[in-house]
Length: 335
Image (cartoon, rainbow, N blue to C red; front, side, top):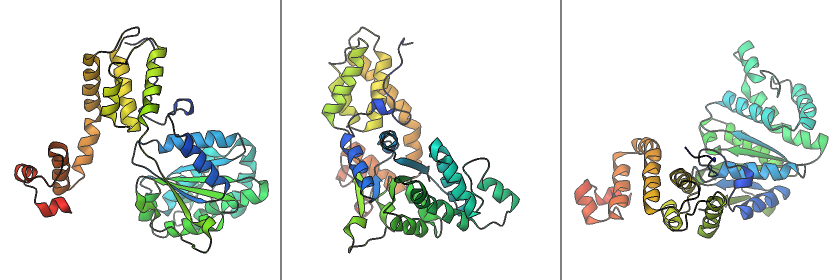
C-alpha cells in the first residue's frame, strides 16, 4: 500500500487546485456571463464539464457572482424538474442571500422552498398539485433576486438534453432564459450538440444569440508537465514511460488521470517507473473500464456494435476484411 495518496483524481469532479489547463475555457465562460449571453457547454462524458463549472463558481464567488447548478440527468417530469431546481437553489444559495430567496419563493405561494421539505411536502399534502406554477416560480426567481439584491446570477442546467423528454419544459426554460438576459446568465451543459435544437435565435439581436463552447481533449504538453510534476514531488520518476501514458490516454481527461493514478499505485516512492509498471497500469485500467464499456456496448444495436468492432480491429468499418469477418454489410457501415 502506498504511503501517500495519489494526486490524480479520476472518479469525480477535480478539485479546483488540481485542474489542468482549461484557463481559456473558464475565462471565456466568465466573459460571456458578464455579457449576459446564453451559453452552451458541450463535451462527451468525463471530459470535465462539472469540474469546469466548479472552478467558475469558485472564482465567481470572489466577485459576487451567484452560480446555481442543477443536475437534470434523466429528469422525468415537470414535478421532477421542480424538485431538481429547488434542490439546486437550496444547495447553492449563499448564506447572505438565503433570506431574500426564501421571501421571494414564499410570496409566489407555489409550494417551493429552499428550507425543509419544500415541493416534496406540497405534493404529499396535495397530490393533484399542478407543478407548472412551482416551475415558473423557480424560473422567475433569479431575475427577481437580481431586481431585489443586485448582482448577476449564473444558472447552470447540466445534462440539459434530458429536458427534451418533459413536455412543455424546454420551451418554458428557453423563454425565461431569453427574457432574463439583462440580469441572469444561463449555461446549458451536456454531451450532445442536439441540446441546442430548441434554442431561440434572434438574428436582430446578436448579443442574444447562443454562444457554444466545446471542450476538447487536454493538450499533451500541459498533461506531461502536470503528470511529471506530481510524480517528481513524491520522488517517483516516470520520465521513461510518460510518453506511453500520454499516447494511451490520447488527451482524454478522465482516462489519462485514471492511467496516471494506476501507475502511481505501481511505482513505489523513490523509484523509477519501468515498462512493467506501465503495462500493469494499462491492464488495471482496462479492467477498471470494462463494466462501463460492456454496458455501453449492450445499449447499442447489433449493427452499431459491429461498426465499433470494425473500427477497433480493422481501422475502418469499410474494410473488406471487416465485412467478411463480422458480417457487416457496407450499407450498415455507411449508415
